[in-house]
Length: 74
Image 1 (cartoon, rainbow, N blue to C red):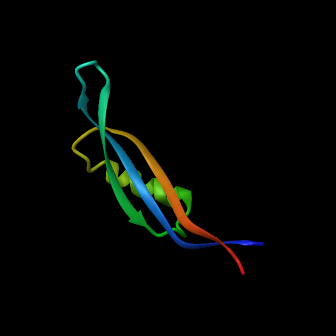
Image 2: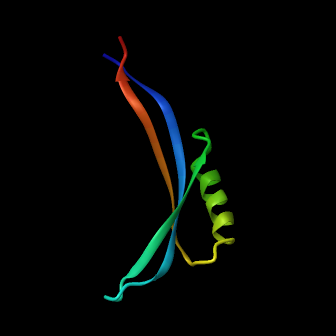
Image 3: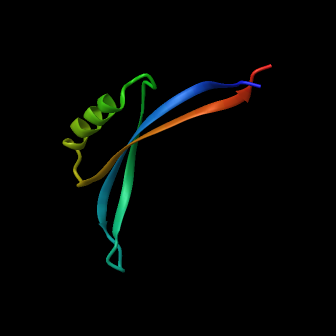
């Protein structure tokens, strides 16, 4: 049976370096923003880059996370 997707969401995730742990490893936090799932990867990266320039902390990465519900078509 064919599989169908529904309730698709896309999240722009900006990973920021908040400091250093007692063991010397970087500690991170994240800014998660919902964006239109139809945006191209380049557009999501462009938005993330522009928002990164506004952050107080250094940015360690920009990610796109796509999620959707899956079901079998009946």
